[in-house]
Image 1 (cartoon, rainbow, N blue to C red):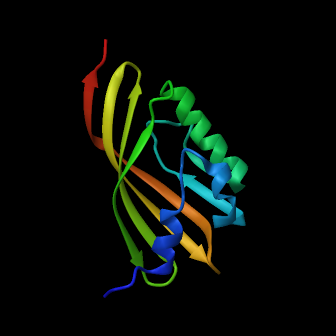
Image 2: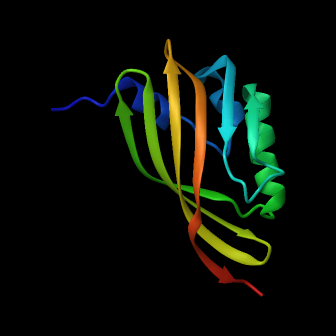
Length: 130
């Protein structure tokens, strides 16, 4: 029987809809990096859990509370990185959007120290909601 990597187990405990219940998973100096030139008001670095909560609050406002994350796969890369593939769903500017994203998590001493959120911004499914 193959055991799941401890860093995969750690990342699977995270609930993006309830960050406050996941404080024990993060390093004090955690940084969330978000790359999306199509959302310049959201793109950037967010420091600490407060910053991560701010990021998700901004998405909530921009999408009218419709932002959802569906996990597709999760893979440990060595002893420091975990890569997750997710499907993001939301309504933005009266369009239902579904897109792929990758989040690369860096784990240091048993805590999530850093993450890079990279959405596919050029290939996405759009649908008018009017």
